[in-house]
Length: 338
Image (cartoon, rainbow, N blue to C red; front, top):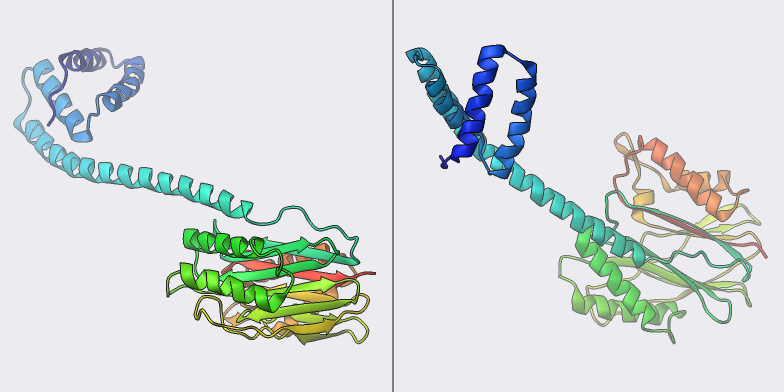
């Protein structure tokens, strides 16, 4: 046991003596304040038991053997407790430190995502919702408008969570932002992003992605996919949904990979729906939601704005899962309204 300071010994002796004589509740309050002194002196629980026993022996001239022996048991219990308590405190401090670091990482991750919605001047409206299942997300989304009014959009899913996923997201953003002359060419853009990813991530990680742009001059949506969850193309004239072709090797597996580019003619009120697998892999009970259930929800809210559609679809699917997301959820809808 550590050496107890004489001043601390005297304070405790006076406090214990006063209480045994008067049973004054104010003395108990003083005992609570004494615990602060224990913390400042870095006293362990077993140190406190040892102090109490020493003072007790001095105050009470005769201590029965059974009482004396009982302190041996209590002391051994508190030795074990003290060790466990210090370990618990250390783990809790480390947990708080990690929590703080994750909060910073989550804030940095959020800063990688676009914050201002694009204007509606190019004849399309954009609806977007992205909700992480935990503190940090493995989903990435992107949108931007060039000088010609063409709107580029992307959704990516990093196979992994936490800080590694955030670092992968930063690579995707860097790869897109560093290639302004090709950013609205889906095939070449994915090829460049793939090279960056392949050179910089571990073999056990990879990324799926779909990227496309809408050209308001010819009302076409050009897109390419890298193994990402297929989205939907809604044709307003026939009130039907078609799957978007997003086949292609996932990012990061092979340096030399090419990606096919597809074109869809977009008519008034048609919708492009991009999503992450957190949408299609929603569970209710032991079953996964069917894709036609998702399209039914989109059709149900199709009279609303694009942003209201994604928000209502999310709320319905969240309710279906008892408000417990099992995976990151990202849903993006682009609708031609002019």
